[in-house]
Amino acid sequence: MALNDEQLNNVEFQTAIDASRHANQLEIQTRAAKLEAIRIAKEIVMENHRTVPSGTAIAAGDITTIAEAFETFLTA
Image (cartoon, rainbow, N blue to C red):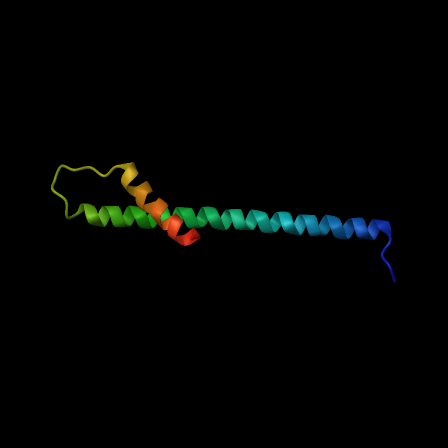
């Protein structure tokens, strides 16, 4: 039995909704992975900072450089 036009439209609409949900879920997972990379990078920088001479400061660039390296590694 063939589907009528309304049923076909409903199927197409549901498929579009599912695709949108999937895309949104992937975006959320990507952002969570980036946040985790930043957290790990911060921990690495803080641990490495223990061995440098007193009076040196941790810069945001130190953390983002390592986080970008993680992101590049994970997406390669």
